[in-house]
Image (cartoon, helix red, strand yellow):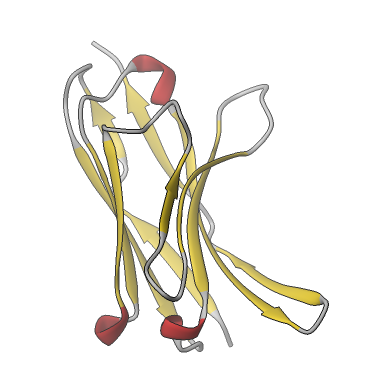
Length: 119
């Protein structure tokens, strides 16, 4: 059974930092493209950052220069280092693993971890 488990969320003041982790089990993370998404109250889920199986990264404009996505395939874990946090970063953050098989995609999601940026 595939599981993605996020951790590291919490309450932080503006300007602070958090590091999110996504631990995967039941899959070999190295063959999946991975990503972090977030959903704020009343808003749609949006992409935060992705890292392909080959290590190519991509970021939403709103987090460029502040967030860093990384992966540790040996430990089947992905990370999101978040610096200079802003109140608008407040959301539930979700971990995603995606693999393309022919014309279809296989997606796995974690349960989410809450990040609240507030003074």
